[in-house]
Image 1: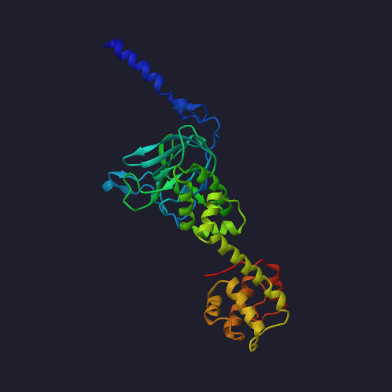
Image 2: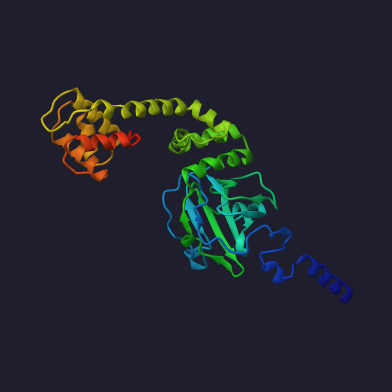
Amino acid sequence: MLKQFTFLLIVISFIIPNTSEARHNRGNYFGIDRSDLDNDIVEDFAVPILFGFDALFENYGDPRDGGSRSHEGQDIFAPKGAPVVSPTEAIVTSVGTGDSAGKYVYTANPGGESFRYMHLDEIADLKRGDKLDVGDFIGTVGDTGNAPDGVYHLHFEVRDNDGATDPFPRLTETFTLKEKMSFMDDVIDKYDGDEDDYAEYLVKTFNSDFKAGLRAGYDLPDEIIEALEDVGIVSEAKAEDKLANTLGTIPVALTTELKTGDNNVLVSLLQIYLIYTTEGVARNNLKAAGPTGYYGSITAAAVRAYQADRDISETGVYDAKTRTEMLDHDVSLKLN
């Protein structure tokens, strides 16, 4: 019996790593080489969901199971299927499914921390030991495990040597549109399913993001471009570009001063320009009235709002300074 016990201790000593080594960021940690990761933690990072979340509400530490335990992560709510990406460089340490966690991915991160992504609907084509760059695909938002049915969210944990820490204060950023579009190659490439179907789902669910990316000229995967074409967004974007170019020529034609009391086609052109390139209450009132061609109080108010936005004299008169501002700025369509 003693010999068996001694043998068991020897086996365990080989299986369980030295604690001091395991806690150090460099070297081998449960078979994972962390030497490529920085020794310093990433203090602030972007929300690890690309599309669809509206706001964050801190819920770390909230009571769970009638107060018998505390919530050890940050729940981030977003539509089912929204892409989840790594907000830092990382190494995949575990991929699997659990009764509580549902489908999950765990990673080793800089500074000896580890991040956990739970309740995923789908897991990216990942395996233990894979190296992740910022923006690399991890999976999609879901409701697996003990998440309530239909309450789609990512349970996101940050852990250090002492256990779970509050991620909320460090989620200070969101990825830019340019970054989101640049991540799409990896998202589509590592989606563990039908890539065309997922591209179509993304485009239909988050069409405003992809339309903006398309109009900005960012490179997108072929699957996304094809999905955009299938739902008509490519042709719609081209039409909007043509409208924007046309609107940009209006100030060129409006060479004369326009003011209250004027009633002609030039006023109609000015009204069309303001309706489709400005925002706010004054613009909405002008949109409701329509391009009547009459320069009344509604048009004057819309001109004053434009002048205030451009930090020029708020005369309510379309004058040389107002025309110069319009000529000097690219048209940004406002279609709502």
